[in-house]
Image 1 (cartoon, rainbow, N blue to C red):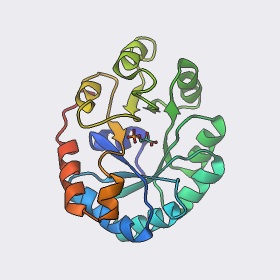
Image 2: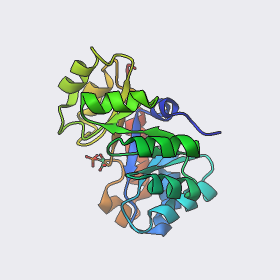
Image 3: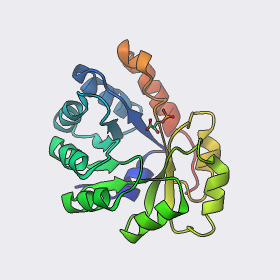
Image 4: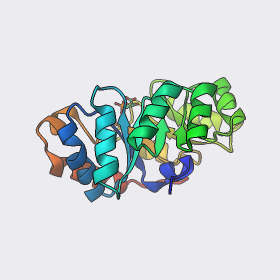
Length: 211
Ligand code: 3PG
């Protein structure tokens, strides 16, 4: 079954934002994150191997729920879904991306950074949104301000989030989870230090949240 956007956000406190440079890393990385308690995985469409990595994880790690990040067009969404992605994350929102994901039957966490973008996403039925780039665009103060007019929206702040600042975000009533690349640092991936990634995943899973 394909999860809805809110289910993706409510599964673990953190959605790892993953940049893979090597197809051979995809499956061991997915297993390392799963071992730490994280199964919603966002593999960004930023490298030539991204789609092959999504395909490998979809095929070989069925306990993971693989998603595609950096979805910027209907064509990206289509390619991700064909590769086996069960959800999509976008850095911004366009009705074309919204419609593509809807038609493909995959969940979308659209990125928003302004009230107008929230309203556009809401018009198309999206109420579980990624706040991007969260810390650069106003962080905790912005989320508190949005809770007034947009109190039916749940956010996944992403961008500049760390283990240190995640708790204050997760304590907000409109934050369901956070996203971040800190669980999968380039050096750990290069060295294939999977135990370190499992430890960081477990640390992230232990973060408390309110919403
Ligand atoms: C991204 O799209 O790169 C994500 O927002 C991750 O941001 P981070 O590297 O600041 O966690």
